[in-house]
Image (cartoon, rainbow, N blue to C red):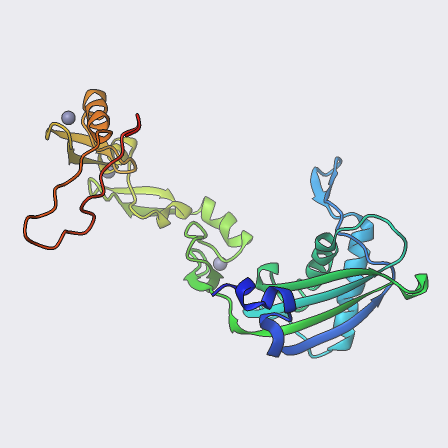
Length: 282
Ligand SMILES: [Zn+2]
Ligand SMILES: [Zn+2]
Ligand SMILES: [Zn+2]
């Protein structure tokens, strides 16, 4: 059942309906959009423009002052609801204004934006220019971030990561810097020889000592689906035929319409009667 069928997207409030309100605050002043990062030509580093930075800092300070016992939660899930009461008719996108609020609360309530699992925002003109403001509610949602833990290659301390981040081997930039310089001895998965390499390479699925070993390890013997001959192919490819000639022949046969005849006197097997359609039409 989809959200639209249930009417949830139309009627709201959403999954946060019964979540606990963690924080609600009003930030006075005309709401701002998140400005794009600018480039500092002298230091060759990106920076956040001052206006955005100041507003983020004031939202963070307000949040901290309202909830003094508040500490950053790196594991929790949150919902963010914001109302923007605008002064004037300047063009502003709700999503860019929301981004500023989400970034302001990073390091105050959550450690990373990705912990926000639901957002809701609206903009309306303020009744009076001096009533321009941003109203923010943060709710704590049930559940935790789907982190897994890995052990830092250098300091051996556990750190939070994702299964898809398998190349993240260190807890911090500092440890990563050390791992690039530190050397370790590994055993080649192909020839069994011991060899020295940089520590950050030690996490490879199979350590290999040389380009020659990489080539041998990375290939496997397969049987051609056209002529049946054995051939060598790289593990990373899906090659099914030994040569371009066989590949072309296989493509040609595959485009013919072939209807398998159903077994006589029995139940038709799954897929029976469904033929392959020719590229040239029926
Ligand atoms: Zn570390
Ligand atoms: Zn080797
Ligand atoms: Zn072949």
